Length: 128
Image (tube, rainbow, N blue to C red; front, side, top):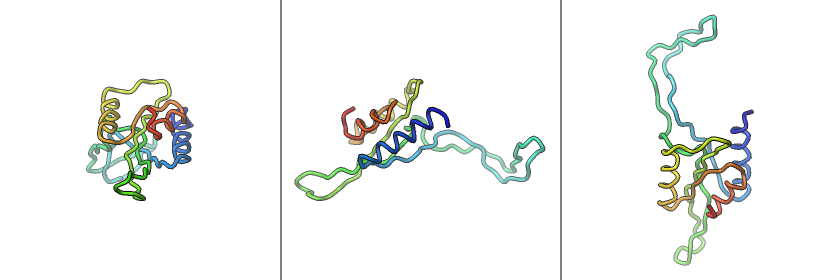
């Protein structure tokens, strides 16, 4: 398991322990088509092959929600607040990733960069 995959799993567990739910987000491009065979070297042959895009460039690695009980006018109602975590080990976030985080935060969600499970819990709690 890579360090990034290990950290991602640790973050999901830590956020779950404080009531949040996170799901992996796949962003990128891949080939799709009808498999017609496999070559001796293991390569797959596709018919009607085309490139498919998944996700939106800049989306965080993990997305989900944190339940929050709303205030006086809706006492007892629980709402889901958007939650996005960009997992980083040593690299820096891209401009598009920072833009996504900013957009989520400006629209009432909670988003940020986590290099540790503790970072993720602080984001969940709205502490940064």
